[in-house]
Image (cartoon, rainbow, N blue to C red; front, top):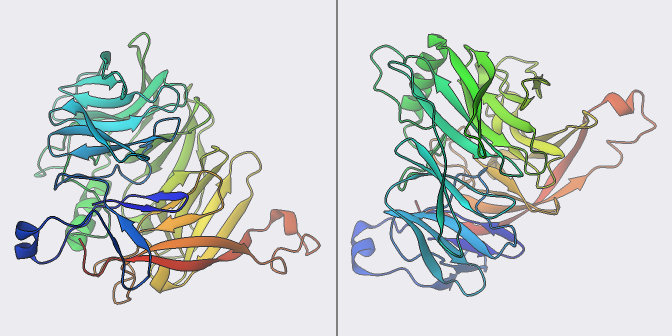
Length: 392
């Protein structure tokens, strides 16, 4: 099901816990959450429908349509009329809705396609480079003017591990949510340890949507993942060094000509972790989950590209979320809470949260010594929107 709240669109897949109820009744079109008083609106019709992963753009440029995956294809939801239109048939790996044209980009059988959500006209964008023996190749993001697609090539795989899917951090095949820290946490941690230790050679590449040219912009034995182009600057790519978060300096940017490789956060204490990075809508800021150290002190932190300035918003363990997002105007944040197997285990964080940032002026007084060099801090004023304790 889907949830639509105020000026901030929050899309979450969830279902009734009791299997018998799932089989016997269709969830209502809308209802009032008894714990919060907020109206919840169901946007999807088919069980197994899902929103895109939290950092992937699902909206057409006019803001009128929302892209979702359905069990056997892709569809859009008209956010005014709530009409659902199937636009792609068959199982595909969705990338994003284009920032410029609104075309829906996806991969099928090693080829990137784009489908217009209004006319449903489909065009071939380009073919992925061939995977090296035993390796994999995939694309994950489209730039702001839709001239480039970025992806990774992995040479080989971890010994005795199954072959990975031919995608790069694409978690939106239907019924594949990819929510870190939610399911099989211990198994995922073990897998990430093995993958990091393998130091497999990788390439970060771009695919030109006009010419089909493939260009390698970075070679590394770090595990490259979580690719996201800036929503406004076609030449800037955000990515991560994947792995157990307390063992990697995770968040980086690079320009599409291979220059400007910059690490956005450096760990300064044992067991400090940061990740699940995402862009502000204006492309000026990168936000990320930060814990100093893990499971103890929680922040939503930011890095401003032009100035290098930082802002950290503190939140209590009960309000931490596995994923965060921000409204287009930057004035509101949302979080999807934490489950019983997440880093905030043992605390009742199973809510959808609305956060209003509050800067503490006395903490950020510009007259303080070296104030311009220091990290600014604040906190969130929090509202619970939906109780997720009885949902998936």
